Length: 469
Image (tube, rainbow, N blue to C red):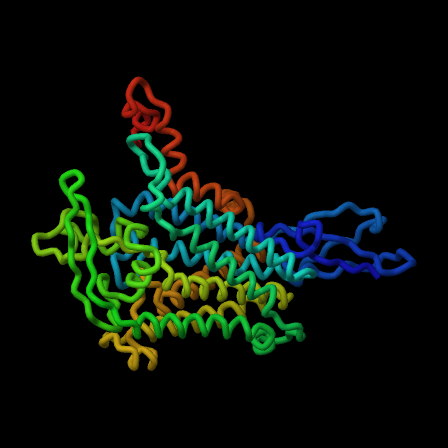
C-alpha cells in the first residue's frame, strides 16, 4: 500500500518551519508488490481534492505538495495593508495607529502577521520525527530573524535623508516588529514540537484535548501579563533629552501608583526601562499624538503649552511585557492551523474557525465594555480592560485574533474553495515574499537605497525627480 506523507522540505524530515507552506510530498511504498492504490486526500487542500497516484512510485522524484494558497493571499493582504497604512496614515490619522486606547486600521497589521505565523507553524510542524533537531532549527531561524530586526529596526539605517548609517551600541533599539515575531515564533514552535498530544481528533472538543497543554501555556502567559500589568508598583522616574545641541534636559514623571494603564505610569514601560534602559527604547512613542501631547491630535504636531512631562519620553510598543500577549496571538493562530490538519471537509473547517472567531470577538467587546478604574481585583472579574495596541491588552489580543480568523476564513472560501486565484495573484506574490517586501518598504531600505543615487548633491536624488522624496 502506498503511504503518502507530507514532510518538510528539509532532507532530515524533522520540520520545515522556515517557510510556512513549503512541504514536499514523499511517496513511501511499504508493500512488496508495488501495486497502485488511490492516493489519500490531501488535508491541506480539503476533502474534495486528491493527488493522483504516481507510476513507478519507488523511482518517483521528490515533489512539492500544493501550497495553501489562502494563507499566502492572506499574508499578502496583510503586507498590502501595512504598505497602505504606512503611507496613508500621515494623511488620514483615523487609519493610523491609535494614539493609546482604542484600535484603528493600522493596529491590525502586527497581530495578523503573528496569527499567520501560528497557522503556518501547524502546517509545517505537522509531523516532527526528531524533536531535538527541530528545536535547534527553530532556535537558529528565530535568532536569524531577531538579528535582521536589530539591523533594520535598531537604528542602523537611520539617515534616510542625509545618507548616513550606523548606530551607537549604547542607544540601539533592542526590540522591534521582527524581534517580536521571532520571539513569538520561537515559543509557539517549541509548543508545537513538544506540547502536542497524539490522540485522535474527530470534533472540536477532541481538538482542544489534544492541544490542551498549548492552551494552558497561553492561559498562563495571559495570567502573568495581567498580574504584572495591574499588580506591579510603578515609582516616579525621569529621563533626559538633548536640547540646544548637546545640552541635556531632565524631565521628571510622577507616578507612585499600581495598576495604571496610562502612557506615563504603566508597568510595561517600567519593565522595559529597568531591563533595557530607557536609551534603548523607541524614541518616537505613539502616545505623542494624543490630545495632551499634540496640538494636531490625532496627528503629530507641536507640544501644547501645558503638555505633561512624559510626552517626549521613549516607550517601546514592542516591549517585553506586551510581547507575552503577542505570543498568545501566535498560539491562537496555531490552533486555527490545527483545524487544517485534523479536519478534511471544508464545511468542518469553516464551522470550527467561525465559532472560535466569534467567541474571541465577543470576549474582546466584553472585556472592553465597562469604563471602570484599572484595579487588579476588578480586572480579575474580566471588565475594564480596554483595547490598547501599545500595551497589547487581552481585549486587543481577542479583537485582532478574532478579526484575523474571520478574514482568513473568508479568503479560504474565495481562494481554496471557489478557486478565485487569478484575481489574487498579486496578493499571493506579496505573501510568498512578505519578509523581503517588509524589509525593503516597511523598514525604508528601498528608499534609502534609491536616494543613494543623486546628482552632485544628495538632495538631487531619484526619488525627488519622480516627486516622492
